Image (cartoon, rainbow, N blue to C red; front, side):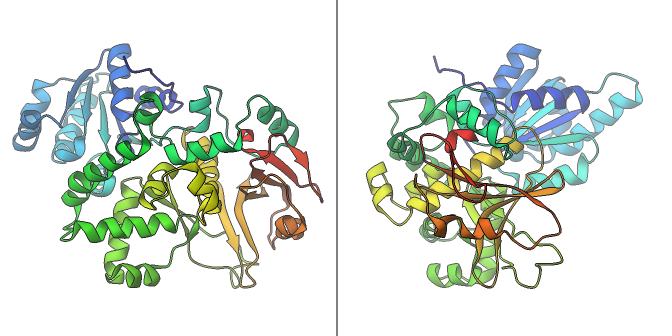
Length: 413
């Protein structure tokens, strides 16, 4: 029997069903949406159906009202993106229940692994009746089975948290290769290559092919491989179009598909009035999972990753993702940006929280000199005071650098 990993987002799902008639759980394929829905079914007595079943899917598409009569609320509908027409029928049931004075909280829980078209239907049909929960791959706290909290720079607390558990560098690089999807974490015999090979085949054949007309699947695969090698870098549409041999419009369309499918996300540049003329305007691109990015970039083992040019970008990707997950799993907006100006002064993460800024660098090393911290030490122009500065890194223990800057282990997150 598969081991159940406690997911931090589950509490937010329970909260949502106590407040709203409809809850939609979105996220990439294989992040664990169905597993949580089955847990909800068993614990809260929901009915359950999946539109992966072709007969259920056919009925939901042909006669959505009959489908909902056959499957009364409270109901979980897995993979609802296969029958978008259901959303209007769900709207009718929700509104009818409200008019009749019946309890209409927690009527439907929907999942969708591809939000590209699904969100249009949600906006049109269920505005004001639905809460949307974005589910990520496993967080480091979930893997380590410890409490998760929204990351902020609080040095005494950061030191205490990082001292509770340590990760050796080789173990960390193996984690980057294996990624953070639940199945490889639970099924120890399953290799990362096996999982991601199947994942890519399923993702492109099912999700992408249904959304856009990818005439040449090999070209789309090449596009994803190129993006994987660019994780942690600024998004340059013209360069990608030129390298893959497609036009800029297609690049933007394909990027949108990967964002909607929770394969990648963009980090926007930090700016306020005092810096707007000098900052770089392009967002940075990150894969949500380093295992998938490494597989696509053909970096298949920890030794190759450590020796290659993607070591730094993959470490940065993992660390940025982990900090964002601490907010996403609490259903809080991420207060994170990056900074780069026309003089190429760069800060990996700028956190705007509680009226002040924190500056964070993500590094693959353990020891650092002045060149590593000088941008943080000098700070950036801003209307907000800069309260905290740190380097998240692979050091075993936290230690102070110059100018009040601390090196913090990855387990401080």
